Structure formats: C-alpha cells, structure tokens
Length: 44
Length: 167
Image 1 (cartoon, rainbow over the protein chains, first blue to last red):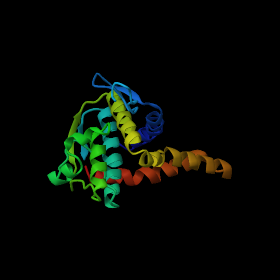
Image 2: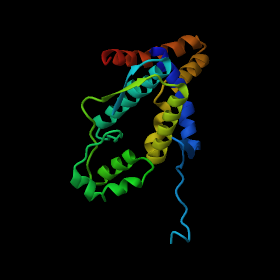
Image 3: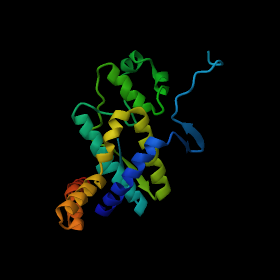
C-alpha cells in the first residue's frame, strides 16, 4: 500500500496540470465541456 | 463521502489510495475548519435550505451538482457537514484507465468550480516536497536519494498508519 501512495503522488502533478488545461472530455459516451456557453442571438 | 473498499486488484488498490487516505482525509480536514464541501453520491438536505437557494433546478448552474450544492449552502451562511463514518464503496476490479479517467474528471471539476481551492493542490502530494528535498540536498552536497527517501517516509509514514488504523 505505501508504494501505491508513492505512485499516486507521482500521478497527482500530471492530473493537476491536466485539470488546468483540459476543458472538454467524454463521460459515459457523452461529450462534455466546462467552457461557459457563449450568449447568442437565438438565446436572446 | 465514499471510502473505497474490497479492492480486488492493483488498480482498485490505487483508487483506494486516492479515495481514502488522500481525498477523504482532506475532505474531513476541510470540514473540521468549517469549510466542508459536499461530495455527491448521497446528500441529505433540509428542504427549506434547498428551496431558499432556488430549488433543485439551480443545481444545474455548475457542471457538478455537489459543487453547486456547496455554493448554495454557503450563500446562506451555512456549512456543509459530512457523515461521521464514510460510506463504503466496494471497488472490486478496476482498470488503470478507469481510475485515471475518474480522477482527472474530478480534478477538472474541482478546478472549474473552486479554482482558488484547487490551486494549492499541487502541494497536496509528496512530489514537490521530495523535489524540494532533492534540490536542497544537491545544494548542500548531501545524498540526494537519502534526502528524498527521508521526506517520502516522513510524508507517507503517517498516511500508512492512518490507513492501517482504519482498515
């Protein structure tokens, strides 16, 4: 188990950076984005 | 607050290391200082708090409903409280890809919904302290590997004890 703590802590910086630079992903087959919706004429 | 349990393979054990002595630990520490965060899977509400915050439909304001729940509660000057004992979530067999995708998704959610709280997470793990120890050892002309090992033991030793006590 302690070795898994080490593996986890080696992974954490990669996850950290990924979270800052990634806005779009696929979850359970659904395309998702974290970008705010741009207001449009259709939305009024 | 989920606690990973009954791992059946290495990657499920890895997920336990994320869920249990890392994420759950930080969640309870945050709650202890009055800054609790909701984490869905199960959330109990007082109806009047939800209704005063705009009703259940307002939980669609954020990409994650538990993050929006936290903000809704805090806007009313209230605090999130966690259960006394986390709920076990049996993990069974997991693939590394599943663990990776779940953890990056959660991290992206935290970054998006609470960026100021997310920013310091870079120092939540042992990687930066070990790098700092290596740099200090190199500058002081002492054994770099020993310095990194010492920091890793000091960092993970208490965590291993916490895991053992809560097995």
